Image (tube, rainbow, N blue to C red; front, side, top):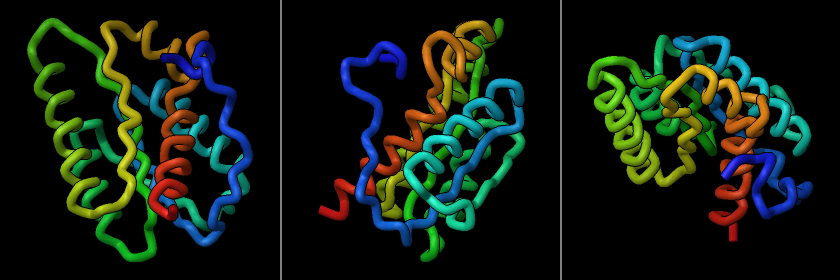
Length: 159
């Protein structure tokens, strides 16, 4: 469900632990889209009063590289949650399927092994227009939703 149309209200201000540190890892491939996701993520973290000094921005070449970067940052003691942002758009070959599956499996494995929130903020769309609609367009911003998910997971794990 999109940020714009979901039944839940926008994330309320959470009494978050302000000592949390985040790695925001974003793909440079499909930059117009991934930078919009990154910006939505950062805006949401800022709105929740996460100090910029507690956010490590990590650009990687493409979505495939998100998993290895996530593994590195999730292994660091000073990182509490990893937010991964990318965009894979369907082409004429099966490359799309292989990349999407590898990234989903890789990020899931990193989260399980690290026992830290590792958030899948990767768009997997048929067209660039669909991706733009989800990167700050008419369907909201999945980068913002990824930041919300990280905050909510940290809160859930705290309890």
